Image (cartoon, rainbow, N blue to C red; front, side, top):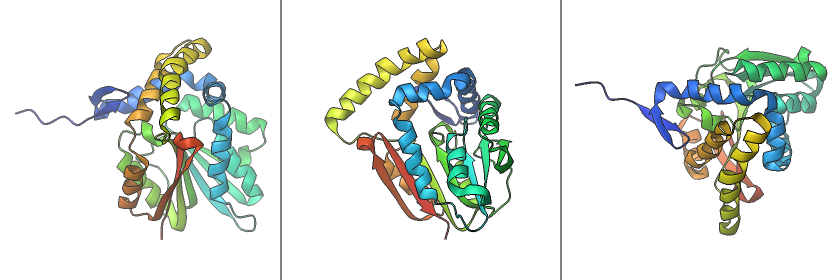
Length: 252
């Protein structure tokens, strides 16, 4: 008998597990150049406030060296916020599997004179080429739902954090207000792919991104996964009526 195939979701499609990363890479290759513009348009600028709220929880030290890693860091929004908040003693390693996104991040960092404190690493969240117990904090914003093996990514987050280090994840969530949920769903499935087609020339990547949000575990289920990876004091905070949530855990 043939071996059982491991499947996962890619939006609403079921695909072989080993194929998902390549499909995700293709999505972000297509949108890298206009990614930041689309974030502003899709969220009406709210993504900036959400990322500010995430970085406020990082609390990089101003008086001692602070090592931070931002995984699935894309064009560097969160990484540069952390570097700015921490000042000269803070260094940030930005990890992303997509070279096109990293290229945009490097250009942005150079323009803002952050290059000396940011390191750019092309790698998968499931297998980080980084040493054990290296970082004071780990962030991943709007990236973990695109990881084929979420459990592996959480295990890697735990591995690279120091004792006392904090895991923080900003991700789309489940809207908890029925009226808002109906409006949000209508906007997501109708407007966002259409907007993506106008801005980037292709609506398909944004159709996938909308569908991937609906497939992501509920906040309670994801919190359980974080705990199972070894993190303690796991909790989450809903923002904007549950459109997004910030998840937190500590390596104690």
